[in-house]
Length: 308
Length: 186
Image 1 (cartoon, rainbow over the protein chains, first blue to last red):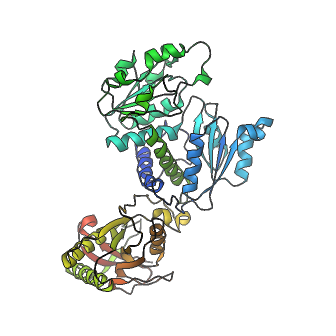
Image 2 (cartoon, rainbow over the protein chains, first blue to last red):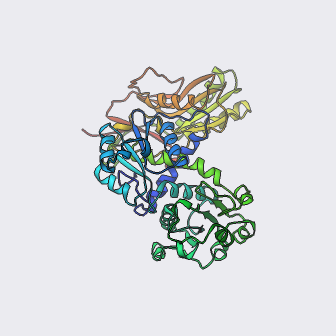
Image 3 (cartoon, rainbow over the protein chains, first blue to last red):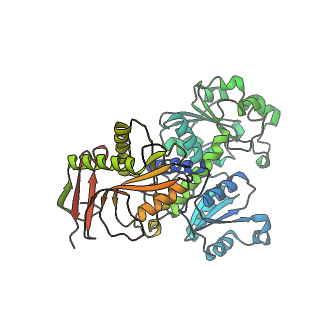
């Protein structure tokens, strides 16, 4: 069995079998990340190009390490330093990159649908590393991987996602992924930042954070994206923290062994209290390690052998 | 049917007893060559090398009264034919839960053929550390080497034609216990 498409643009179109294949492969890849010699020859001679139109340190580093651990060559293009600032269109940039022989293009772009657009024009595989508020599938997959690794299953888990759902591509990839694997997803956040039709994706919108956290097995606290807050939708940091900060008392509402996740970077004291972020239930650092393993799995499954 | 091609059984090379005797002899040879079981580790190559390594370790325990380390190697990521395969092999975990540095590691596989699997396995093993020595045990040596590799311990040498296949069937994986030659018609 292998992935059906040449690209990974979102979890919306992934089947449960495909997600399971990715998670199983990531399990083997994690063994490599934990070794002293983090290198296997699998993708020797292949090229992975990361094209980031938005700032990112973690995701980009994670993809580059994943490629390097598999022996692929990597090149990074940052929008501010490239021809992008001269007004070159996304398609032209991508075409030029592809003409240089890239096997995989990892794209982050502020516009929803950018990765899909690129996937349709390029022969190379495209991995979406975040497109607007649409999807961030590798983050969704690493959340699923971490939950499955710790809980032994995904089916039947109660997952609470807390924060600014509207601007969150992580929330969307999580909702598609978790619900496809049979978990129950509850959402809580300011009503002004809760998309109207989000329940159509299979998640349940809760009236307050307490309801979402009740008996939850996994809590994913979203980052308050201060850079994306306009139009007076956001209630103000102090107000937000009072209503939605995941702190010690609120954590007690969840299952005693609930996992606490955060896609990073954290605003400590705003969406998550520092003692909880560094507490025993936090798996935030492990998420970062698992991210490399999941991205290695994606690279292998998309271009690692077997003529397509 | 195997891989879409009709394959018929040509001959049985080993039965249950034959496999048992071969493994017992190999266990004795490993101990004899290495003057005991100290510093020894057995690493089976997925898939069928894994149960064979476990069985050899049990026999060494019976003979020497000493437990040796046992691991499992997945060589998929080290294969040299990945880009030419028609299918994508599943990647599984490597489980070598002990340091290989300074150990005498005996790689265990069911069949040695071209030698390419063993080449990949040595690459994978050396990425885990620096063994003092690597030796190779195979239940069946069917010839046709494409690399300068030979087995130190062989259960049975079986001259084969290239169009034939050797199938090692083990209780743990296949629910039966025998070694057969299969013939693919032209």
